[in-house]
Length: 110
Image (cartoon, rainbow, N blue to C red):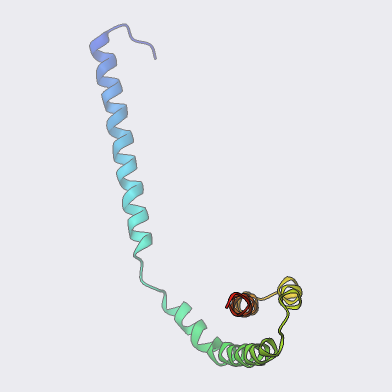
């Protein structure tokens, strides 16, 4: 409600600011507790259950990358490597192809 007393208005505004400050502090405390929360044990259990499968996929990816690396060694054209780069879908594949392109360009400069 409206009040004409200036002193009362000041008290009301300072009370509102104090409530807002307390709310901000609570929000910051909540964020801090979430930020440093330890991992849940069920999440670790999921990791243990999926570990053999993820390890198998990782081994397959490493084998694929090794084969790609050997294939890239045989290519001597930057244009051909650029075509492969545009067709590659995985980050690691693109990373290897870009490295091969840099290597070829360095050899051309020498």
